[in-house]
Image (cartoon, rainbow, N blue to C red; front, side, top):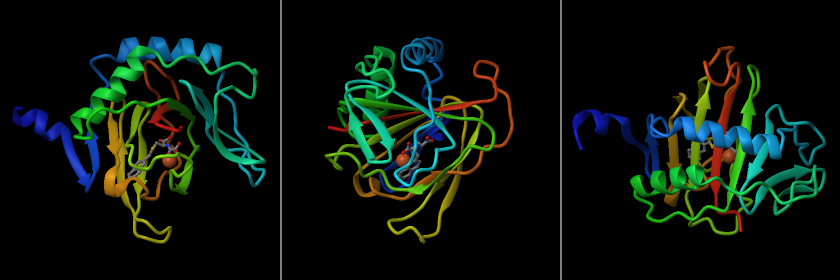
Length: 210
Ligand code: MD3
Ligand code: FE
């Protein structure tokens, strides 16, 4: 590994790995597959258990999809909007998640759920923990596409101080182990334009839900 590559891969906190530009080499393939998935399972606003619409629009692919409605958060095999199974996870997605987890040192990662979140300017995600999964020993892989976002990484209590991290098109974040249950969120997006995705940030979150 040369110095340039080392600077592109860094362990931000214990078991939190940032792989800058990791999705860029295969981006055309990933963006084409993303477009096909979103045709089959359109983005929609999920409703939180509290009854408020989320500011992001959401879809899924893979055997399981993360869904939210008035009854709570859970993983479901079918799209509640169409009643049909979520689109299969494209092999370009699966390979990216598997290679990112392996590169970050988490070994083989067999994700069964890919959540697609679309952020327009002003959209955000409040601080939360990912704890709707069965097995917290599995890592999570997050792929940023489109316009930049400022991530917040916290500790293990909501009030812990947070570290802010800008994420750009093609960046991949992998976390697990001791950091699996850290609080995290996304600050409101600033207006910007990306040549391929327009005024939008797409985040792909790969998890093992079941
Ligand atoms: C955890 N989505 O849908 S993971 C989610 O950008 C969600 O849409 C994010 O959180 C998004 O549940 C992608 C963000 C993230 C970033 C840094 C972390 C999670 C982290 C650091 C430590 C632990
Ligand atoms: Fe999350």
